Image 1 (cartoon, rainbow over the protein chains, first blue to last red):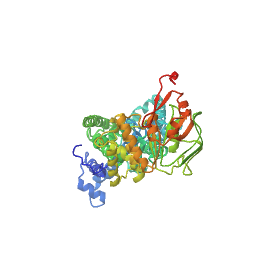
Image 2: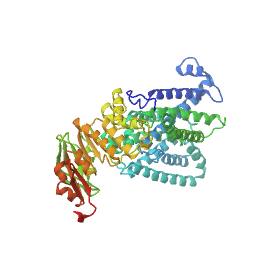
Image 3: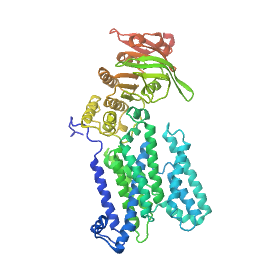
Image 4: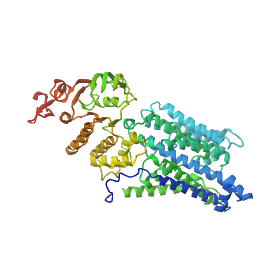
Length: 340
Length: 253
């Protein structure tokens, strides 16, 4: 503080170079992820193949284009969706512990998936994302509907989300008990998995996730106003109710899509926003784009771990996110406290 | 000029403001005084344009509900304190109406620095607002309002958390704003301070405006004493300044 000179102003609130650096980091992590595996693929060959020049052929090409690339992109999309919506929920509810699954999206999706698994014979996996997407959306809409007072008090929505979530989980458990053969697939789904990734899942989920994140990043500068009381943000030129509604709708769409494409992957929505805030010492929502890139990179790395650590077997990705995320998170929390 | 006619506000079936009619002149400091529960804070929120009302409340001929044409700064008594936000970020929020959200110009950043110096917050501007004392937080709020360069400023008990030195410093900051033509409307528990700074005083009790007039007239009025159940005494110092103190017992009157 002694080194500060008067007259220079207070400095930038957010430095966009950080965002650019994180985008580059995501690119490098992505390249790393598609190159590693039982079959090693060279960086140069991958780049050549991607730009359409003479690159990989035959089996190598199939591994890259049909297996690793869609899986890596899906991991990035899901990671970005969960991290961004986590950060937005934390702002809207002024609660640092809020996570993307808070409004019943997770339990709703879980119930939808369980209904799909228990009622459909044969190949249900094509239907699973659709059922869980509807489940998640329906649960969140029910939470909204029940908490008619949302506009007066955001915490009411939070509480009704918890109630709807518990209800959906109860129904899900009942269904599981009645169809014990469904226990294992449901359990696998709950732990989260990206093994089913293919271009069809990537294409539909990217539409929802990228457009939601686009909306959220567009309004991100205004979101800081929601950290104040409604009267204060109103006097600063914001309509807090309208802004909250847009933010929650976009974050929920991103979450529901992520959950239905990959199951429940915990911890990303809480750990990544706090990680970015902790490392940059900035609470501002202007970091939202950065949070999206870091979330994407985090999940791509976690998935790389999930498929290589016990290779050829796969670890559930949720195990990796928690196993690596929790200690790292505690480390950041600790250093952050010391530095202030 | 703000013109209030038959203003009534009901919340959950309770009448908070009851049939208020008065005029608030531009470029002056108007102070709302009265006991707790008189409706002062609600009146400020209505003036901000954020709360519905029946009757009419016009600023230069335009109804203010969600439609204020002026840049209005609001300084609440109990602000929401964002965790992890630094003082300079917090004050910078005030520039959102001038530069657009999140687009502080270099000029604005210099302006924010000046405001921080003016409110004696420079030097602690990298600290988190959550770590500020009550008085420092109050000054951060004032700083944000100053950064807003408002045309109308509404303050809810701007001095209640402050020691004597900072009370005067904050009130002088507000007086500087007024000298630039800004209309000031505040609530204030300390009627002596209200009489010292405000040109006009509105006495409120039970949701009604009992009296509205020049500060010097209102101070010596029967209505002011009525609003406080005759539990105040007004003395005049040699300098001619009135001092208003609570009386210990009604029989003293």
